[in-house]
Image 1 (spheres, helix red, strand yellow):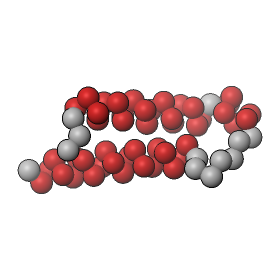
Image 2 (cartoon, rainbow, N blue to C red):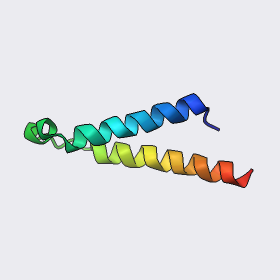
Image 3 (cartoon, rainbow, N blue to C red):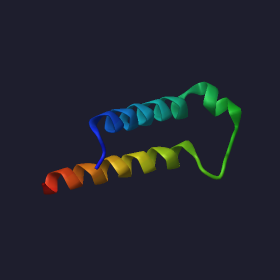
Length: 58
């Protein structure tokens, strides 16, 4: 299980990634890596969702 500190860090990271992804500066980079910021955001969201599901089972 994730600690409350780990959850806060993941939530903050997700927020920062969303801000970066939507920024004009990032769009100007024209950078298209194999793993995108969207992939990272989705992975973090799934991890947080899974943790919330585990908590609700207890």
